[in-house]
Amino acid sequence: METIIGLCIGIGLSAACGFRVFVPLLVMSIGAVTGLFEPSKGFAWLAMPSVCIALAVATICEIAAYYIPWVDNILDTIATPAAMIAGTLTTMAVSSGEMSQFASWAAAIIVGGGTASAVQLSTVAARGVSTATTGGIANPVVSTVEWVSAAVLSVLAMVLPVIVAVVVIVFIILAIRWIRKKKQENVVRTL
Image (cartoon, rainbow, N blue to C red; front, side, top):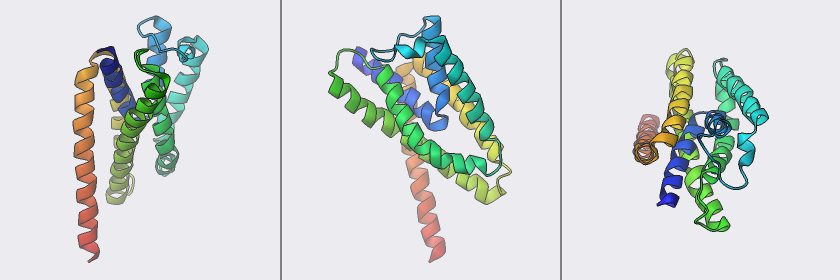
């Protein structure tokens, strides 16, 4: 049961990494520093106050950068692989000791990295639609929704992991369907 709860927390935190890379790591670090969260073996560095401060600075810089026109689109190219790595790390940081090291890393890469990548790609698509339809004027609204979603999702993943995991899986399915629909509409327009 502990393994399933850990994977559910990992899914929620990984999805949050898809919205903003540093927000879930900061939430985990704050939880570890305050004693509300105990990271798995090898991730005790999350409980260091200096790491928490560094993650806070990185989070503020990341959030601020997404409000700069065109920089937000450029950051998406960097954030996509970074989200996958962060999703893998966050899932590994909450994995239980019940699984072998190999199984833990495999689950973290598949579940965490895959979830973060799927969410990140949907945010890239949303920003692309926003840029194309509004010339980027609505991108700050998209950015605000993304970082608030990352913060709320990170906290909820720690408190209500199973519910968050189900919501994230439904979101990913809907996002994939939406992206496929948009691609089909683009194909029809070009014909």
